[in-house]
Image (cartoon, rainbow over all chains, first blue to last red; front, side, top):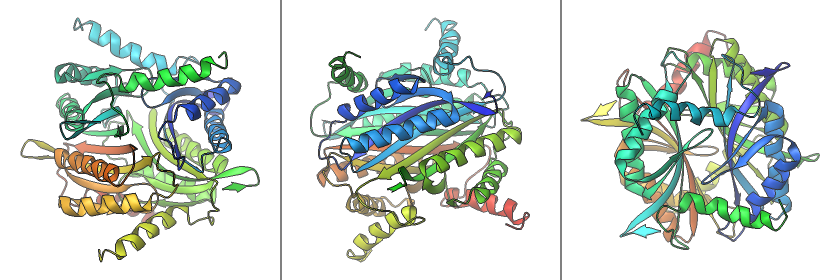
Length: 115
Length: 115
Length: 115
Length: 115
């Protein structure tokens, strides 16, 4: 939902440094985490591919751009990122609960199966 | 790494039912979870967008196709899925640890920052 | 590459309206194209999934956000978008050639195969 | 739609070799194109990020796995691929037209705008 006129974005991004000559990306992802700490946005580096991040659209996309700048500064000549980003206007999202809320709904449904 | 000759795939997929006339997707994602339970593969429905899934390439991609079939059977006329899928041949992945292993490395690096 | 201090982004996005009760998305994609025309950025709605778009990072991500706002205004309660976005600092990209340049390189290589 | 009992998949994938020490990926993408030629599936390496590919679900996902194997064989220790893959059961897709059909619909709508 909107904050002022701005859409609230619930995102999940996976940043891949290219041309680094090393197959490990953990140092670069750690650098992104330092950037995200400074952004003040709600985020979570998670298992597998991706970091959850949410907030106003412009702040979320700026933070990911700041991660690119930081990863280039750490030596990556090229970066490819995949971002999944969602917005909705059918109901309000309590800030900071956009990502967690989704999995809670799925758990409720499966609880009825006894799963 | 390969199992026999097959690559071991660490994936993360986000399935979106289209044309359903309802903005909630939790019932469809729950249906996917029931399918994945039967697949015998390591998986985790997680906060935000996506489900982590890992195993031999053909089993992982077949399981996602089975999710499509099940979600169509539940009434979705159309489905769009985004899959992030990775393989590596530089070291073995202990089956079932591919997704968790990545975030552990990042945590180790940040622990030195005191984050 | 940077324009001023800003990274030049070469992106490809696929926007999916959710909860619309119709499986066709062509009207929504057409609406996005109208928005992109106004952005002044280089873009191309292409076959299959996705629209190519390139320019300064902030302009590219703002234009995609404007597409979300327009598609919500047209009636979609929820939207999920997948964005692939890349930046590089190893060489300059002539503005407007970022997306086309990549496929040209592949064609040159394959031309030597006689493909 | 189904071919026999199998879903017909319209996909778009973007394969990224990691840890190669070179930021150019054109040689690897060319290698994928050689693999796809052999698959017999309808495909198109296109401007920007990604290759369009369509056919029965299992054939499409196998072909992408074969690309991973070939790119590893060419020296990439690690590969990350993003796949957008769609299926539908509301109408038949004439094989080979799944990707082209979508953009044609958008063009028809915009033609009425005079765009």
